Image 1 (cartoon, rainbow, N blue to C red):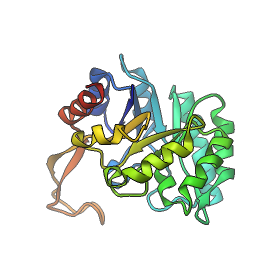
Image 2: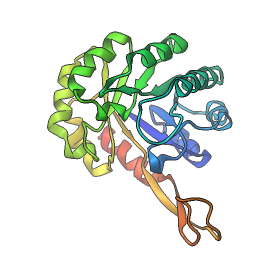
Image 3: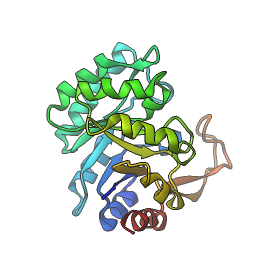
Length: 240
């Protein structure tokens, strides 16, 4: 059976994840920009919610690329400690140096995480040799890789996704994610992936009366949250 990981960024999404019985959640904030580290309060809320599946927390200190300064690495490690101490089951991280996996960062996160599983996120899709990086990440001890196979939507890169699954074998899990829609599920599953990741979002209108920043102009409105119907359709497709 293929697992379903739901990306969640708010309390309503947590409620939906628990009600639908997803296999795992990736908890983050700011999904419209790829996600950043959520607040400790949101992590604690997720972990404490009855019926909540394992909570894996995205630890990403900022927007942009994945080549981090020493101070940013220190922040990542501190956040990993905090979210695991708060009860998270695992963490989701990524780092890139000169087009290759930042092995030092990954090792340091794995040391802090101890026996808790670590996922390498879609920084993988920015690597110069993704297929070659699979062996690197597996040897380091990473549990799974989240990837769109380098495309904006994973459904547009199914042949390469199947190749990555074959390269990974039983050494490391390849989890397909990126623009996943319910109608894509059947063909994604045929590549052999053991897990699918999706955010299943909808936009809620919400007027902004004053400019709050460069990405929050006055008059623009709306925020994204989990769409229960879309998430349920993905689960139904997986269980069919």
